[in-house]
Length: 72
Image (cartoon, rainbow, N blue to C red; front, side, top):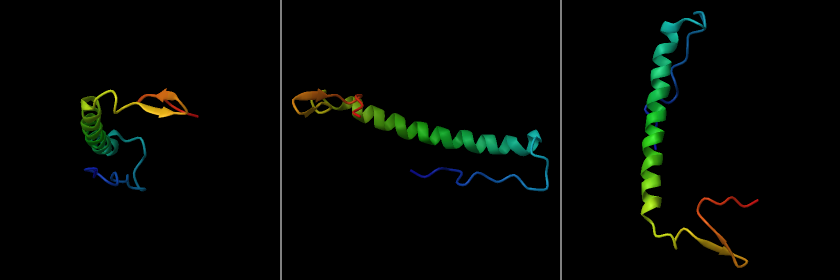
């Protein structure tokens, strides 16, 4: 997956850091990057949901481990 804005455009060192006009474009770039990641994750979630439940279950030492289980 490639992000539309990598890296995010840096803010010039000569400008004050709290100037909204300097940050607005960066926020739009960040939002577009998050939208791209969200679309990619949605596609993965749809693919996983389409799998049969039996495929999503593992057996470890006789105990079932499901897709949403964390093992420590």
